[in-house]
Image 1 (tube, rainbow, N blue to C red):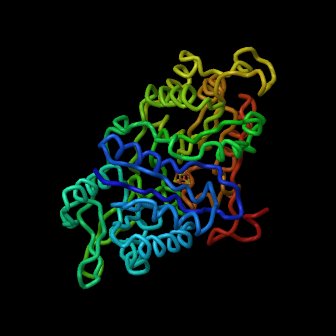
Image 2: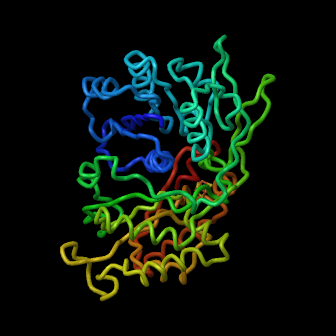
Image 3: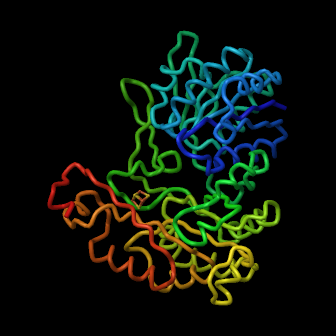
Length: 401
Ligand code: SF4
């Protein structure tokens, strides 16, 4: 079986490491389930510099060195692949994630040290790639969802990899491969009192994508809105508004949280989802209320919420959590249900309070719905965290007032 080294690049150098890379932890788990041998070097958590990275790259005869991230990690990724190729020339350097998926041909041109790129979701393509590695077969053209380079240096996109339909088939992330002590030291989440007091927070993705079409939003392209198109006579990718969304069953979500509590003693969950409320809406308004009901039935409800007393982190049992919402998709009923299950904050992409700008950005909300949701959320006892943006193309001084 393949020996795989995952390297998590430094992101936001000026900030403490706060988020275990969820996708990498999931991929590690998926390929370990297939029998591959996996190690992780978490450069973002350790911040140890090139000496340690060099030792890690030379520590074994890796078959694959895999890394990825969002576009802001590009500088760190570029540095790592250069070092990896120089020190471990036999290893196949594989990149993936948003930075590559958003412009696969350009990244293959800019980073000649990357041998193969995984375009879009890697849940199916990466294990398939490793099966080829095991078989000594480097015919990448027959694996869906890759970008590869031919002998002349030209990059080629293989046919699109369909999204994994039933995401409940995914194993739980291999959080144990990452230095959780470092992440737990940075658990504090400034969006609520409970988040501020968190000592052992983990992030979870309960869903993928978003069903809305805000025009400024990249829309989590790797998880549903990527389309293959012909450009300059060859396949390329484009990001549109297919609005493909997938969500785990409430049972999967709650069992995952129970697992994280029993194995890592977590006290807070931060849902990374783009927009929890669109999943609730598309499920016929059952998803979040079912999660909340199971959360309570399975003993995850925080003691302070159950007893109606202020949160005392020394005494409170159970798991508090926070996530994302939308101004027009939620209701006092769902807010009340999730508050009872320990929701302490919700992020709202209000973006603007100008009706004109809201219309042009396709937000699907109005100043009145923004204000109403702020009030409803506070009345439910959940802290609303409004996100505002300034500088939309047709913004003017009046729209900022
Ligand atoms: S609601 Fe949020 S995630 Fe969904 S399209 Fe709008 S900005 Fe993007």
